[in-house]
Length: 368
Figure 1 (cartoon, rainbow, N blue to C red):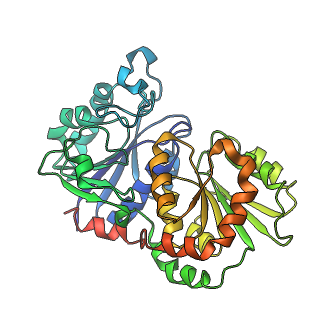
Figure 2 (figure 1 turned 60 degrees about the vertical axis):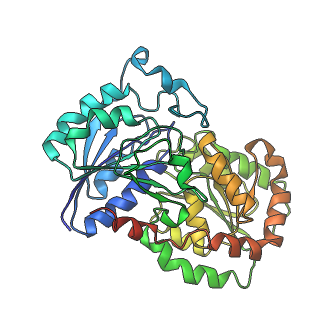
């Protein structure tokens, strides 16, 4: 089906890479269906414009430098519970009005059938200003904390309910809610059966550490330090996955050489599903990769790196689909690893029902 689709999403050292990466998953699926796809991204430090272009998509870069004094005061708000707030100070890099002014000529030229927005710092203000520039609008959100004017809204949070958006979107908005709509690359569904079969005979030979594409606080390095105090199998293999923009990448590579277990650091891997399927335990950020681990029934210990990840960690923990470790309690890592190993079959079973990895295909049926 031929469509013109434009994504508005950002990546940066502050934002991370998750928003752009899940948009790329959807973009790939749309391209396979014959759609023309383009991205509008601001050139923040740590942007992924080059990576997007390497995947074969057109990009339109918005300028990085905007006077801080011009930034919307609402961008200072970090409270996720308050309705009408915008999460993340200066994540957008401008006011919504300025961003819309820069996007307008791009959208007027492309005349998209769909604009897909995945940005915590954009809401109905931006959407209303550009309403005449597109046929339909889709919003990807996880917070349910601000108003939208859209035709379709996707929130892949486990347990998300329609009433969470009742006062935030028009009655005509179609809601796709819950982790069954998690935007995962097709290889996760392909590796699912193999991975789940491995869980029937649990062992602990491979540990996977994935703290997101940026890990600006170097939690990975802190985890490696904590692992030095653990009594783990001598033949344990530790695989670490990081993004190319991670500021502490080289430090982690050097630290990995000193860990008393066989440890390897991988950057921008293209076989994450395979690595997860063959891992016995994961320590990972409680963000978008949560759904990847659940799809494969991979027992995991989740660590919250940002406020917007707290809800996911809590809900998945309540479902006994993963264990949780506060970033300030890494001295308890060894105990949590032992607990995860003893509960590995339960964690695998409970996490595997959270999502089956086919959310992207389900979504495509609604993008007509």
